[in-house]
Image (cartoon, rainbow, N blue to C red; front, side, top):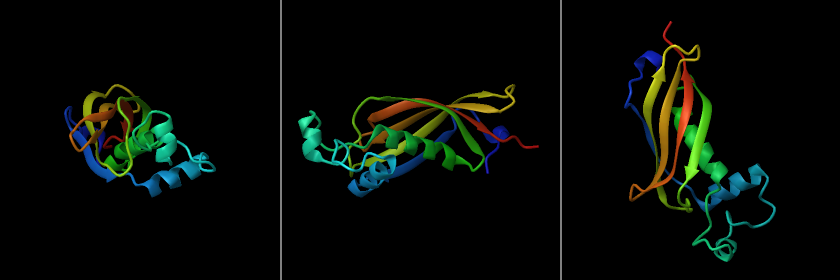
Length: 141
């Protein structure tokens, strides 16, 4: 368990290494409510028809993965705000790294907030998705 007092500027979150399979996307899309018909998320042909090189991981799934990066850091983390920019597509079956970096701490806030930069990178370390997150974490009492 990590506490607010344990966190320093520049601390890293992750990396978590993942590859999102077609099956992972199919399962997410069906739970998400988009699973009755093929879409650019589940069909390479439909994605190609929309000008994409392959079926892509839904943005909502990528945001969920970044949330998991934050909450897996310590069980006492609460995500307060998450803001991302989609720079490039996230394709199925490609190795990914989810990473974060602590950029600020606010000890005066009653929630003991921490600001982080967060990323999803491909195997070439190209940032496909980048963003910022505000999390709160328990203090040592």
